[in-house]
Length: 472
Ligand SMILES: OC[C@H]1NNC[C@@H](O)[C@@H]1O
Image 1 (spheres, helix red, strand yellow):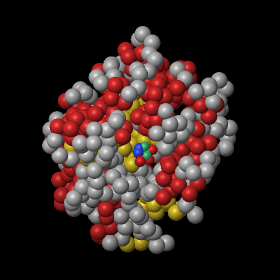
Image 2 (spheres, helix red, strand yellow; image 1 turned 45 degrees about the horizontal axis):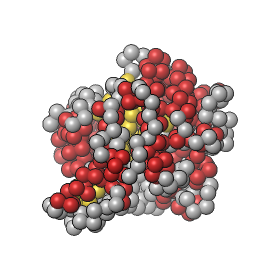
Image 3 (cartoon, helix red, strand yellow; image 1 turned 90 degrees about the vertical axis):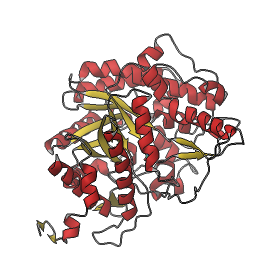
């Protein structure tokens, strides 16, 4: 028995992993990065502090009816005031990397122009504290909190916003490029474009499919314009990529119309962004299938967008099974089948299906030629309860991560160049339109007191990471 900080722990608490877990971690190479991910608006709070300007999520979440029970990111997990303790928590978990996002409106309150020194200083302290604890920062520049002032002049439907983003990326990498070696331009531009401008369930809440494709193009352009600006400011060994979300689509039966519906949905859900990034062109048939006209482009846009990235961040949680026969008017109306007999689901209603994760990783490597992949988000929401003492039992989250890591391990054995895994999320946090009703953390947050309680999954993850270090 090894003494622990809080009196004697049971041996199970010190080694809560199985023989199968030990075999699992051996599949990942030495140097494989193990982390956890968060995003500024979901954890920071302090939305009016130290010169931060408003973002589209400040306005959207304050709009009645948009977010579960009117929850907002005003306080969130109060991370803005708790960085030192949260980094101690990351160290306690044994993370070798931490993925977080920088709030554009903290750095440039108006989106462009005057720099808010306090905002840059906050992120500089965060990065320095991570480095001091031997944790590699993975910095996302845009995780949805667009400065409101840019939205007032069209937001992502305005081509100028792409140029404003490149300027923002330049400013941040000028300040942190000497210390941060891992950069992500955008998180899930599909969500920013379609959920924000197409169906409107996310900020800025616009329901206009054509606008979604215009916004999508300007998000891709922002990524392309930022790449050379960032590379000029970061070290030669540093790497730049972006994180795309994928939901593999499967036909619910073998009928031709079902296969066709499934292919169209795949085009819309999975190929829209990776195709311009990997192949420098939009996927064939996408605009026709969605009944939109191609977004306005200028010569050179697609070359900028398709410029090489050093890695692809992969965000995956689930799959969709598509019902056929009701040929959808459009793939964004395709009918998803559920519940699938014998399947298990998370609190988000997402099917737990590790096999589709494995197949996705193989596809990204073979079909899109990605030479380096990081899982920048994977995790699950379950009904976690805390009884006021030091434990939160979340066996289903442990099982979920085990199964998805098993699928990732198989992909590594099949030759996929997977370099790291970030579970979503470090902390329970603001889950966008679901507010705080959905808990994804390996650490529980009691929002009444802001107390952090490491869940069983956090203790398990810590032991897994320790076993990987020992095995490497
Ligand atoms: O829904 C879980 C996560 N998905 N990707 C983007 C994150 O901001 C979400 O919290």
